[in-house]
Amino acid sequence: MNILPQYSLLEFNTLAVTAVAEYFAQVSSDQDIVECLEFSKKNKLAVKVLGGGSNVVMSKFIPGLVVQFCAQDCNVIKETEQSVVVRVEAGFNWHDFVLYCLSQNWYGIENLAYIPGHVGAAPVQNIGAYGVEVKDCIQAVNGVYLESGQDFTLLAHECDFAYRESCFKQALDGKVLITSVEFLLSKTPDVQVSYAPLNQMSAEKGLPTPGELAQWVVDVRQAKLPDPKVLPNAGSFFKNPVVSIVEFNKLIERFPSMPNYPQKNGVKLPAGWLIDQLGYKGKAFGPVSVHKLQALVLINQGGAGKDVISAANQICKAVQERYGLVLEQEPRIFN
Ligand code: EPU
Image (cartoon, rainbow, N blue to C red; front, side):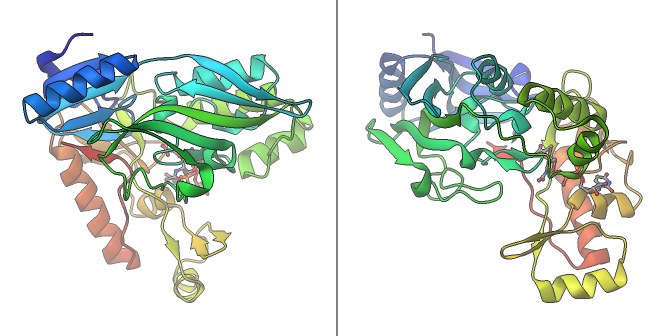
C-alpha cells in the first residue's frame, strides 16, 4: 500500500469535480488499515473514507488522509435450504454484486441493479430504488472505528436505517470505515413489481424472473438517468421530501396533478416533479445543469466546483418559494 501525497481525486468522483487530497491511500487489508491509522495519528491528519465516489460533492482541496477500501472478497457464511448469508467486502462494485447474486440464484436485491458505487456505501445512505431498500436484506455491517482502530459489528436493527438514512450518516459520520456488509438473501424468487414502471411492464409481459426484473430496472435507469462517464453526475441530488397529511392536503389542493406516495409517517413527494414543474429541466446554472430527462439529477457540464452547491441552493430556494418545502441534498459534501 502507498500513501500518496497531493493526489487528484478527479477520477474518484462521478461528478468529475477537480479535487486534490492532501494524502490518498487505497487499502485492502487489516494491516493497511493499521498503517493508515498510525500514519494519520503521527501526522495529525483526519482520516476521510471514500467509497465509489458516486454520492459526494468534493471540495477543491481535501485536507487529511483520504482512504478508499478496495478489498472485494465475497463469502457465504451461513446457508440453509431457504437462504444464504453472504459477507461481501466493502470494495465490491454494487452492480457486479447484484449480478453475482443472480448468477448464484440468491434473491432480494435485483431491484437495486445498476446503482453506482461500492457495497460499503450501500448501508450508509440505505440505497433504495423501485420499491426496495437495501436495509431489507442487510443482516450486519462490519468495520473499524477510526479513532481507536477497534473492530465493530452492527446488526441491521442497530443501524437506524430510514429513507436514505443510517447511523453512518448521523452518530457515526466520519468515525468509521466499513469493511464488509452481510446480506441475508433468499433462494426463492419474490419479485417486487409494485413500482409504477415495473408494474406496467409486468402487465404487458407477465411476471418477470429476478434476472429479467434486474434487466428491466437497468433499462428504466438507462432511459432516465445519465451515465456519469458521459454526463458527470451524482444521481439524485435531492431527497424526496416527506410531508405531514395536513401539509399534503394543502399542497394537493394547489397542485392536483402532483404524484405522491403515502408513507407510515406522512406522504412522500417526488422532488424531481417539484423541480420539473418550475420549468428547470435542462436549465443551466453556470457549468451545472439540471438533467433533461430527470430533474432530480444535476450534471457537471465541465469545470464545475463550488458551482454545484450554488446551483443546488438556487433550486432549493425556488422550490421553497413555490411550494413552501425545504429540499434536503442527498450527496454528501466531501471536504
Ligand atoms: N418526475 C417528473 N419529472 C422529473 C422527475 C420525476 O415529473 O423530472 C415524476 C415522475 O414522473 C414520477 C415521480 O416524479 O411520477 C417519481 O419519479 P421517478 O420514478 O423517476 O423517481 P424519483 O422519486 O424521482 C427515486 C430515487 C431514485 C430511484 C427512483 C426509482 C430518491 C431521491 N431518488 O427517484 O434514486 O432510482 O426513485 O425508485 O429517492 C438516486 O438515489 O441516485 C436515485 C436515482
